Image 1 (cartoon, rainbow, N blue to C red):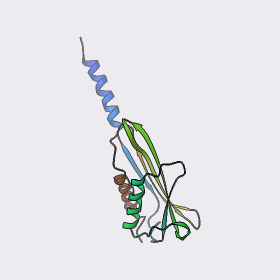
Image 2 (image 1 turned 120 degrees about the vertical axis):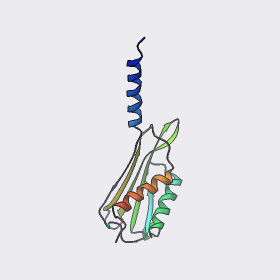
Image 3 (image 1 turned 90 degrees about the vertical axis):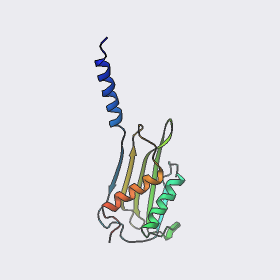
Image 4 (image 1 turned 180 degrees about the vertical axis):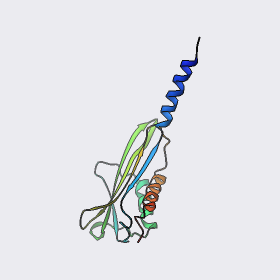
Length: 144
């Protein structure tokens, strides 16, 4: 029996599976968009879980960059968090989106997005938030 075609098919299928094992991080903004260290509040999109670990990581990342985290109307900047979870062997973070919105004008000043494939590992939500803020740092969003 010739096993070469079977081996070739298995190799192609494994290659496709590993090619789909990726995480993508995107940050969109211009340099200095968040240079003002104004009070910020964190909001969760109404249809999402508001994962506690992600919220704490966002709070810590903002605090590390000099943003005082406030509640209510005293904030000048809102960070809207939107998370999507899926089931694959166990729950995993499929997507995390952050929008930085000026409360006075309603303008989106910066965005950061994370998307995970279902074949990937289950990364720490803290690591995902740190990586999103790193992507924003690389674009100079927090620089004066």
